Image (cartoon, rainbow, N blue to C red; front, side, top):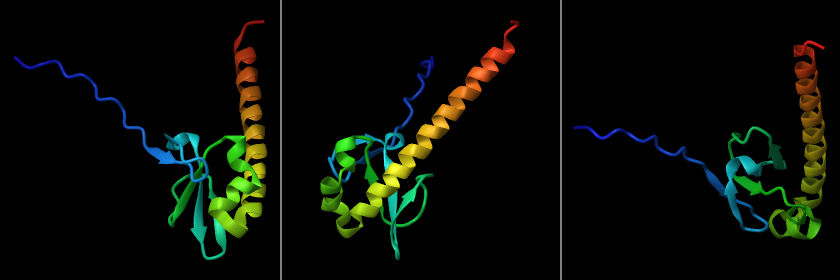
Length: 109
C-alpha cells in the first residue's frame, strides 16, 4: 500500500547581508549589483553580475557600516537606499489606500 504523500515544504532561498553578516530570506533583503560604473540597485533581484545583499536594519544603512563593503561608493549607496525606502513607503501607502477604497466600495453603505 502506498503512503500518502506529504507536501514538501517550499524552498526559501537564503542570502547574507554584507554588513551585519546575518542570513535571511532573499525576499527580506535589498540587492545591489556591480557594473562598470559602480554598484546599482537591483529592484527585481535578477540582474546579472556580482551581487551584494543588504538587510532592512537601519544600522546596516549607516555610512560607517556601508564603507566596510562598498568603500568609496558608500555615500551613493546610502542615498540610493533612502530613495528606495521613500518609494517603497509611497507604494505601500498607495496600495493600502487602494485596498481601503475597494473594501469600502464593495460594501452596501
